Length: 75
Image (cartoon, rainbow, N blue to C red; front, side, top):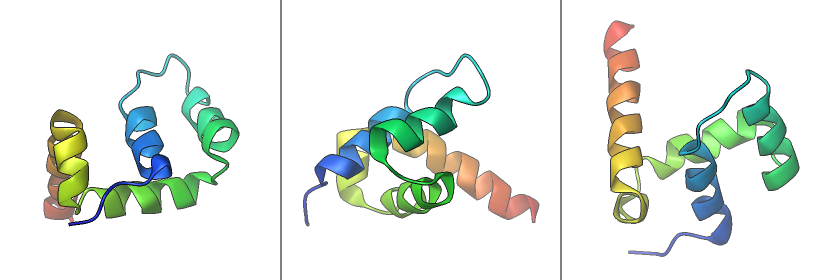
């Protein structure tokens, strides 16, 4: 079992925040992480499958896994 990188932890921390305006999250992704929105969501989706991410932020990861499964089931 590997460890989460600093970027991985930052992605999870950013995803766990509350956002007041529609563009605030996308702006934070660019400014704080230096990632495009597309790349951010690719990284985040990959993190949801890692046990290290679950250990780091169990409530967030479990919630996002449920959302992802709900979207898959709706297809």
